Structure formats: C-alpha cells, structure tokens
Length: 180
Image (tube, rainbow, N blue to C red; front, side):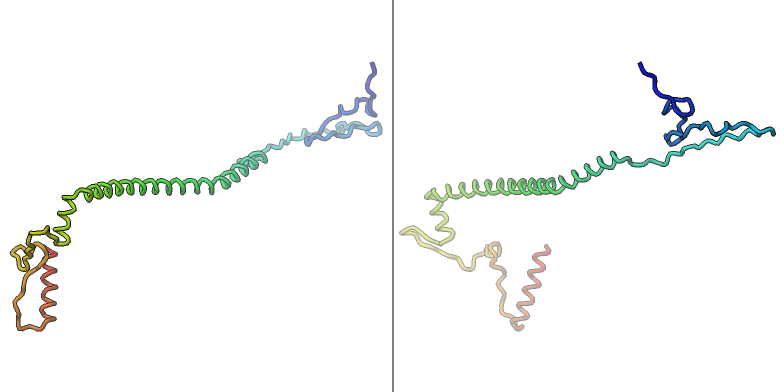
C-alpha cells in the first residue's frame, strides 16, 4: 500500500482550506512566518458575515423551458381547436336544416297524397279554376253581400271630388282599418 505524497507544507494535496467560492487557498509556504499577534494587545476583529438575501422568485432554466414548450403547444393546438369548433357548429346547423327539410318533405308527400285523390282534385278545380262538370251551371256573384270579407271593399258612389282625393281618402281608410 502506498501513501500519498505530501505537499510543501507537510499536508496532502487537496487538504488545504477552501475559499468561499470553492477554490482551494494556497497553503503557507516554509518561507513565511505564521501570523502571530504583536506585542500590543490586538483587538479582536468583529466577525463579519455575508447574509445572502434571496431575490424574489426567479424562473429557473428548466421552468423557462417548460413554460416555452407549453406556450408553443397551446399556440400549435389553438388553430386546429378553433377550426374543429367552427366545423362542429356548422355540422349542427346543417343537421337542424336537414331536420327542417325532412319535415317539409313529409308535408309535401302528404299534399301529393291529397292530389292523388280524385275528389280533392275536383274540389280544387271548382274552387281555383272555376270548372264545372258537364250539365252543371256556373254562377259567379259579382256584388255579393259578403264581398267585404273577401277583400272587395266598400263601393264608393261618385263624388264631386277629383280622383286623387278619392285615392288619398282610401289610403286613410286603409290606415284606420289596420289600426283597429
């Protein structure tokens, strides 16, 4: 077994005192005399200590990298998520529209079924086209008593006023009917 060599101060290398920053202080050499108090009474020096005040929260490098990665991920996913939400809302609108169209198709099929009935077709021909069967007579009443309910309006007698006055009066009468 070998013993490690001793340095100039008689100590092993690396066994010297370390400074506050972690570096090794040089050891005393043989040419220097050790520091001894002088003949005067030396006052003891007050011990000064450095107190480290921690600054308010600092972001470490690792925290900064994690925050950066999360920010990049959020920005990366923001546009696709927005597109997804827009597409879902468009799909929902189209589904609602499709449901409304399906209801309209049902109504039209029911109406088509009515038109397949010959009695319904005859009734519509009489009402809309004023058609009659052979041997029947068609009577149309021009001045019927219930013409007001059909929109015929009142029949005005000729007045001595010009036509535009009658027209203006009819506008006022129409306004009065609309406000009732």
